[in-house]
Image (cartoon, rainbow, N blue to C red; front, side):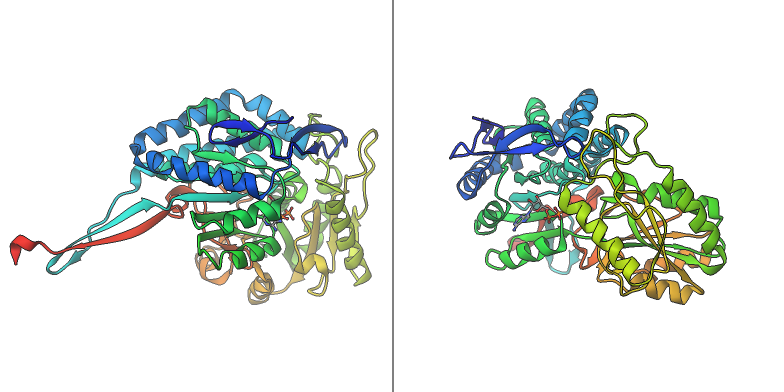
Length: 479
Ligand code: ADP
């Protein structure tokens, strides 16, 4: 029996004893096995979180902060083991896996610090003494995706733990082992039984069990817009607070004043992280006509030179796609673009890597892309750069905003006036200006439109797990 779900401080299996396998996406080999749990185990996890709730909320914030810091230190100690496990089950290159552990740690650090800033407020109202109190919202549920299996969980655990919420967590089926490894470190850092609980298994059954449970007061989800909608519909009965970090379809605009080499540098750094399987990576490249040909030829040369393979090989910068469905989608998007008139400048096909699964895709640059192409409208989640020419700023912004999604956008320019106005002109939650990595733990991360709502990071992330209570008092003695 595989006993690596965490409920009330105990490592347990599924009720039926059933398990499912976790595979290395590069080799196809089984790297582990986890419980195939469902609604009953999910409800028991809520029981545990509910029972642990008041004691955890009642602890001094400083103690919780110290626990977060202890967890961060433990992750630093175990960085190499965790990174190797992450590469094994997720496929990303080891250097990126290490960076993900550091990124995850930064959420525990930042949340520990930010919890000291959570204070009551006392707005002045004539004749009354008002206190606006912030209290932990209660039991929080989180469902996370496979592309950043440790960091996504950390983004949800850190703020919830910092403010005194207890949690029930479900990682993605592709990557539960990293989640289990993180929870093992949480237990080892002294996090009490029931404060964090982890269940693996049937996503729909577990999600529904949590939505149907009126004790769950917060639901935080990162994943597809489609599943986000299912959860939002399911939330209509018990009305938990929702945070939905959904799909992205980031534009990158390279304006005429940009240096092409620098723009290509930024594009490479932003695009190919995790093989393009990143919700904030650029998916639509808008290049000013005067720079287009130079940019495309340099981007194509740099892209084609990227080495694919097993993430444990230090030469490798591009791992496999997570599964067959993922690579089939990338292939379908490229085929659709070509059929509708795009030109493949480089890539466009699967890349055979000797000795490994057929899950690698060539870094691809497509030109002549139009709004009718799937790659221009939907998230491809692969190493594909669709490029399009623009002539003036108004056209670039209109094209950039012509999307249902609104998570991130990127701009390469030095024009101060243009930069100043971007915050109002680009309809995304995050804007990177000459910055390929705008997601750091101390700042708000989240989207608008079909990319969802809610913010993670810094004190803004903590607010998502707090509710406001207005205590309005009239002093009897003064009447
Ligand atoms: P992706 O396409 O990136 O795999 P998904 O939205 O399908 O994104 O998956 C993100 C997370 O949502 C995973 O943990 C997955 O198990 C979970 N999930 C998928 N379907 C449901 C569902 N019906 N209810 C709750 N969670 C779900």
